[in-house]
Length: 273
Image (tube, rainbow, N blue to C red; front, side, top):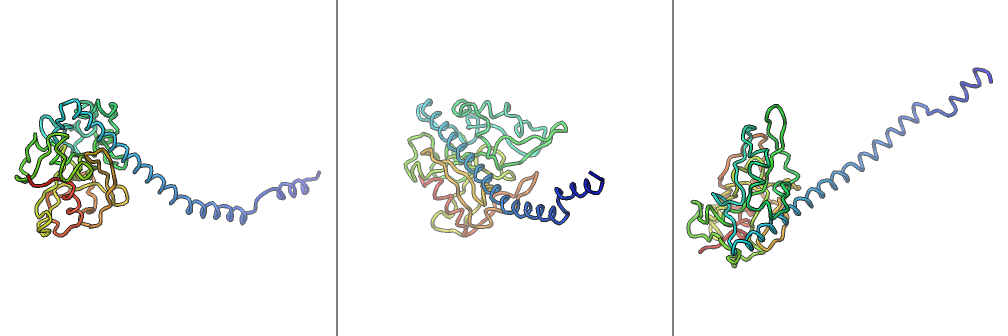
């Protein structure tokens, strides 16, 4: 075979530039069609994991009460369900070291010693320590009325019931009382999350948001309840989901009159004594 025939043979089996561009364009179109579906599936998977974390913690909370004559752990204080104050200071080991507070928490042995259940997988907050970027270890907080500040209201409203035992959840009932929730990374600090009852069912102009719930799942946040079930709540008022403050804290205890999300939370918090 002469050189001209060899060149013709090679050209016959090769792609032209136009054909390559067409293939690339088709791949790009397919990718643009598939990526949203893959992203949606990833978000759903994180939501499922978040719900599983809530169910495990709720079960552990119930088992703790069973082993302690029906007494539930405090939301805050020396007998709190977990210790530690979160912020964005890398020198604060509570932010990133599971041995600091998570492994010593009152529920740890009741959740299969699994530190992962204390954090929503969609919370990507980090701190820097020793030149390393470290994931923060907790996004979960406990409702202030569930165990309270060492079984007191902690200054958040005398006259409202603080639940102390697993048998106390008669009104609004176990299926309607929040125990744990995911708190926003720029709101979370201590171990409990406050729902103020100002204006409950009577004066919505008095509504306030003290601590902000998470909204990592398409403007929804995860909750677990005293009966052990978990659910997502999708927020409807933009004031409940303000712009995220990265590596810092959002202003807390803000008035939010007529906010239907506050009404939803109050209905699932406590009742007058």
